[in-house]
Image (cartoon, rainbow, N blue to C red):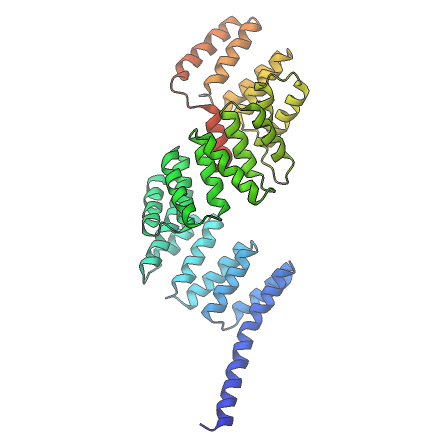
Length: 376
C-alpha cells in the first residue's frame, strides 16, 4: 500500500476513534460540572449512537460514580442488549439494580449471565449473595459470600460483606478472623479497619477495638466513626471518663452519628453527674434523631425519675416496650416506677415480665449499638 494511502487509513481510524469518544468526554464534562441536564443530553447521545462496548461500560461507570444509578442501569442494560456475550455489561447492570433495590430484576440479570473464568464465576456468586442478603435469605447469602471469600480471600469486598453478614448474626469471632486476614492484604483500608474495630467492640475486646480506632484517627482525625466505636468500647469497659471524652470529640465532627449523644449521656450518668439538664439535652437529641433507640429511652427514663418527672419516665418506658416488648430492663424500671407511684398491681405484673425475660435477654447495650451499624 502506498504511504499516502496508509496515512489516509490511519487518519480515518483516528478520526473515528475521536468521534466515538466525543460523547463520553461530553458526559464526563457534564458530570464534573454537576450539570444534570447536560449529562442527560450526553447520555441520550451515547445511547442513540453506535458506541463500542468499552465506551458504554465507561459511560455507565461514570454515571454510577456520580450517584446517577438509574441512568447507569439504563446504559448497562443497553450495553447488555447490544453485546449479549459481555459478562461485564450484565455484572454492572446487576450491581446497579442492587443499588437501586431492584432485587428481582438483579436476580433475572444474574441468571442470564455466563462466565468464562473462575474469577467471573466467583463475581457472579458474590452478587447472588448480595441479592440473597438484601431479600432476607441469610443462609443462601452466607453460602454465596463464603464461597466467594474462600475462592479469593484477598478481595476486600468479599471480606467486608461476609464479615458484615457474620456481624448481623452476632458471630463476632468469625467476623474478626475474616477482617484481620483481609487487613493484612489491605492495611490502608478504612472500611476493613472500622468493621474490625466494631467486631472487636461487640465481642467485648475493648482494648483491641480502641487500638484500631486510635490507629484510624492517627491517619485521619476527621473521621467520626472511630470515635463512636472507641466511645462504646470505653463505656462497655467501664472507662466512663474516656468514653465521655471520645463521645465529645466525635460530636465536634461533621457527620457525627447521633448515637454519640447517647454514649456521652451514658458516660455522664455512670460518672454520677448531677447535671441533669445536660443529660436530658443529649438524650433529647439522640431520641429525636433515633426514635427507635430503646436504650436512649431507658436512660432518659432514669434521668426523668431522678428529677421526679415520674409520668414522663413511665411514658418513655412504655414507648420503649411498645417498640420491643422483650426489653427486660424496661420492665424492671417500669415496675419500680409503678411501685413508687402506688400502682402496685401494675408493678407486680411488670416485675413478673422482667423475671420471665431476664435470663434469656441479650445485653441491650450491645444489641442497640450493633443496630447503629448493620441493621439499617
